[in-house]
Length: 229
Length: 219
Image 1: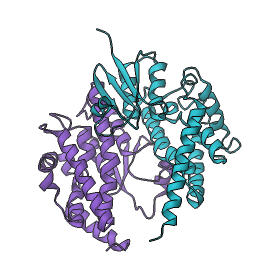
Image 2: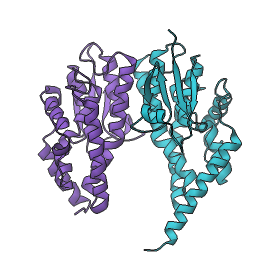
Image 3: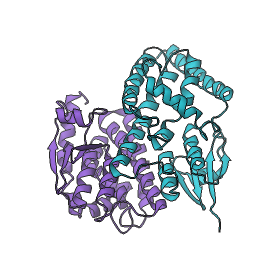
Image 4: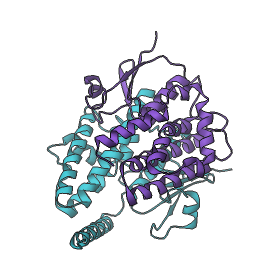
């Protein structure tokens, strides 16, 4: 009996992209199921009733949701090309940095993109503070995983693609090459790495999508500030 | 050679309590240091420069931060006694999923209940009860979230139980009325010495919240 691996994803979800990379890096055969997130399939709702989101990995009929949980499952189930280190302390460090990237870096950069005025200024400052920690962590390493791509690289990978899209749309620098030379060169190396480079969503479609999200955010914030109570 | 284990902690932190439980489950001796969160020690700032928060586990001089990461670390290093995570990858994923759910919901919602008023508070109460009902459903008829044995999800959730009395008082509602099986589970967990020795008295937590509300000018 063969393995059956399905990945529920969308064309643009950076969270699902982590799983695409992990599966392909490990050479695992899988079927991609593309969801339209504005019209979620009954199967998606059945497999992830709690969050109703992608990605969902379905392995031999059993679903796993939440990208960090899925990455660890993949690493424990298919042991070739390990994503996490073997040593418990090094594993704890990788998990720490992954959580930092998700809770702090992603949140502050998203705010820097989607907010306006003072909120945007504050978000840019917060983002720079967070990026300083990553810059320090990169010292002496090509990737966060060391010589080759690992768990933290996959978690942060969206940065290597989305930041330039955000910067183009808002006309502001978020990751300054002069301030963050190591991080900047990681972004280039990661974006061009085999497998990673083959899976980026189409840039023109991404620009349209995120411009639309920004336009909607600006419209809703100006309409709420212009309606007085 | 003996392991040197230190825990930088704060008595009322549900996150610190998780680490205490894990250390006791594994039968480990450790030094506990209570931080003054208004006057953080140089050690805390050195060991957790990114977040400057507790809990921090310091094992033979090396720091580990973030309670779910610390608990997994403890489980991996001292794997021969009282395993908290199962061995099967699918069961492990299931446990991590629910621990993540707990981390994303309970603290923020509980916090809103004792810091907000009116509609905000009502919305937080409603959402907290929905989350607890979902968790109660996940528990089902099992004695613990981990099945027959107390495990990772149990550790993640039970530490909120000593805050329930405070949530209920300030929110004016009863968790037991809507989630009796969940409350029965908290009592079952408290029968374990690792849990009862790690959780403070709910009345102390309540009084602490009274002080905090005065300090923040919430009435």
